[in-house]
Amino acid sequence: MLFLKRENFEACQEFLKRAESVAIQGYYRALTLNNWACFYRSMGKLRNSLRCLGEALEIETGLRNFDNMADIHLNLCVGTSLTPGCLVSVGKAQGGHGL
Image (tube, rainbow, N blue to C red; front, side):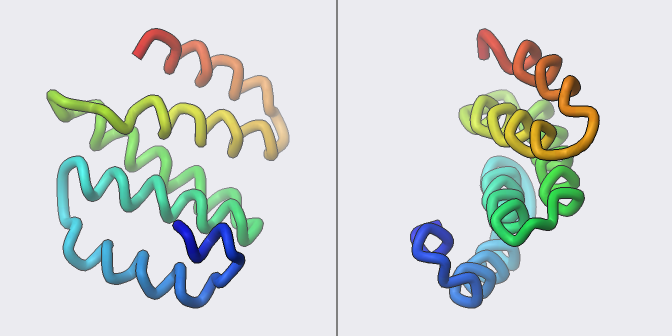
């Protein structure tokens, strides 16, 4: 994600592809999807970002140890606030409260 902060999108995408190839399931898959969501949001591809976050949230919900779920909820709030019908983000935030 350092490359994303530096706006080096090509390098960021390359490292995310590498991470995706090894993070097939579980926590690391959810984390990689969360990072893809940040990448897509930076590129203005909000629909792709929300799709990744939805998949990451599904994975995290099925895990016993869901350390990443709060991050996913916060990113969902950001993503939905940037799209029409942003009141959905309030419900997402409340759903993530208390994790």
